[in-house]
Picture 1 (cartoon, rainbow, N blue to C red):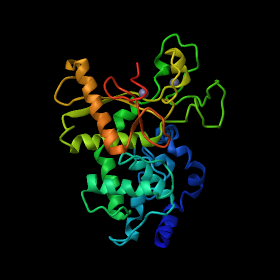
Picture 2 (cartoon, rainbow, N blue to C red):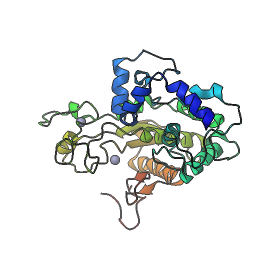
Picture 3 (cartoon, rainbow, N blue to C red):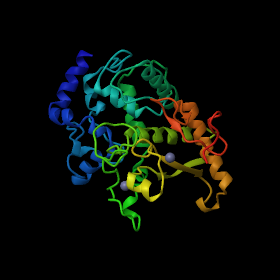
Picture 4 (tube, protein in one colour):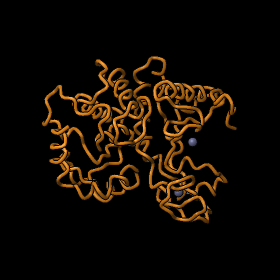
Length: 313
Ligand SMILES: [Zn+2]
Ligand SMILES: [Zn+2]
């Protein structure tokens, strides 16, 4: 840990202030995407992780762990259960699709299980449950292999395209309104979060990985993010009250890879999406509906649903 802290000190020396100010906001995509839009080509040096170097393709970070690679012998344990570090928060976000996790800076029991699952399924190495440089490098490979660029564009709020809307429209990620239309900093039910949480896109990557690597799912492909951010203007326009889509949810469509989109019957589509529900249940510990906090929740489908609450209509 001492060595790691020295390395981190080195990496962060250029941007300590930005880190202090922006660690929390940069968990959300709006700031990330805006910073990138202002200055899309500047600063591609991975050792100077300014916020402008964040990109909308999921390569967002406030710490780039691989920048520390030279500091460590191959076998050294960087993090293990009980540790607490900003790099751990980043790992908890990026591997959330391997068992499910929350963006805490603590290396918990859950983090340990998550690392083991990532080692077993993605890296195909012995499960140690600790983070070494191989794990960090594998996370970078995982990111490169499963691009979410096009999905990110689809996931922004569409309210500005609605006709005859009387509400003020947003630029993709709400206007920071609360349930009563008031602006506030207290993040509770009905708040328009400042972006889509990055965890969602990292879980989407893991769905793509499990589709690829498991023969039960290899005939599938993620078609589109059909609904991502939906602000209050969108809700009012559509006469809808649900607020999960204010930064905490993505709806995705999954179809058969070898078949044209238009040739899918309704039942085929339902079946494809149910298979992804199975992936999420099995691989991320997702649950139907939202009876428990701090986990991944699934909307019910026509055939898969929470047994005591029935299906969504
Ligand atoms: Zn909107
Ligand atoms: Zn939804």
